[in-house]
Image (cartoon, rainbow, N blue to C red; front, side, top):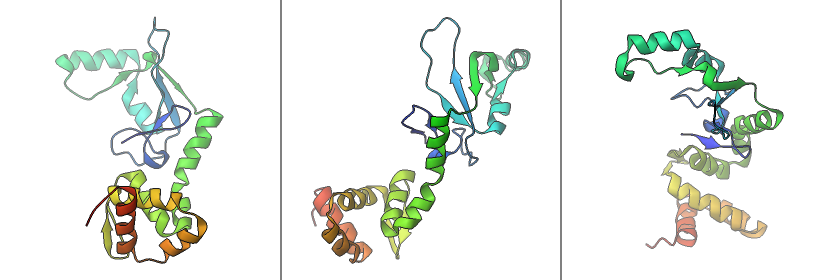
Amino acid sequence: MEKTLPSGLAAGPLGRCVASFCSAPANTVVTFSPRGMAARLGPRAYCNAHVELLFVDDETYEARHRAHPGGLGPRVFQRSMYEIREPSDAEAAELAHERAAGERWAAEGRVGSYRRIVELHSVTTIDGLLVDAWTAGACVALYDALNEANRERWLAMPVAQQCEVAVRLVMGGRS
């Protein structure tokens, strides 16, 4: 699961490495830059460990492809075909903002829990009720659309009632 940040950088959830199931923070940007192509493909954020593991020098790349004909074996990339660099100031700021999402969600209380579910496409128990991403998305959309007086009223409701009201009003659900 990747998220494209406003600068165009693809990063994992919460500013993590895009390598499969890596929970390390992303701190290196890799961009495919083939020779003879004017356009580059979008940059992707990796941790240093995955850059060293996946992007190898030309000799190692050729040796692995000779040892594993037909593409079998560990997946590696030819380092000379990629631009590997530190994130720019804008990209670093976006990654830091993504990493701080947990703190922002905690500060928002129950609505932050809903936002976390939506962002991570997950299911979580909130006050004893299992809330899925679809329902949490309805709760976030409703909360963002309410004025201050109605927000206070909505926040005073139990989770089950909040979810029911949100689904009815935002998603057109029926009971």
